[in-house]
Image 1 (cartoon, rainbow, N blue to C red):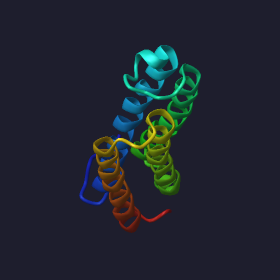
Image 2: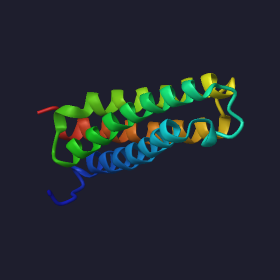
Image 3: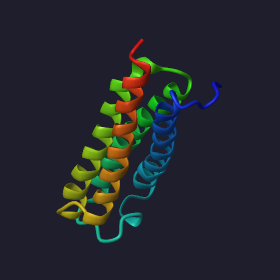
Image 4: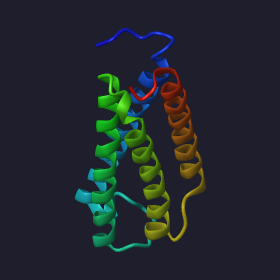
Amino acid sequence: MEPVTQRNFPRLGAAALLVVVGLGRGLGGLAMVFAGTDVLGGAAASDALIRIAGVVAFILAGCVFVAGVLLIRGGQRLFAFAAASIILLFLDGIGNGWLLFGAPRLRGQLANAAVAMIILVLLGVARAREGTA
């Protein structure tokens, strides 16, 4: 693994956040798949819809996790994949809010938006510093 430098810190920081977010959301997706309505108190959706939403969240979280791991390994060419993955995961959270609860949960979406923005800014700085080589 390469040492952290001022030049690669944004990429490695974004990568670390992507891995953590991917793992966390992936575990949440699995919980939705295996526990259905039991895991989401107050959900207005059916058990089947919760499980389907969990599968989608798990798949998107896997993309986020993989993007993070590949960026750690030096994948400067993956900035667009990483950015698209985190944006899709954020949009999935909004969609899940509408489907499962009738509206997105504001505090959760604000936290998701903040983390996504931090990751996107880090990716943008990393791309400017390291290029797409």
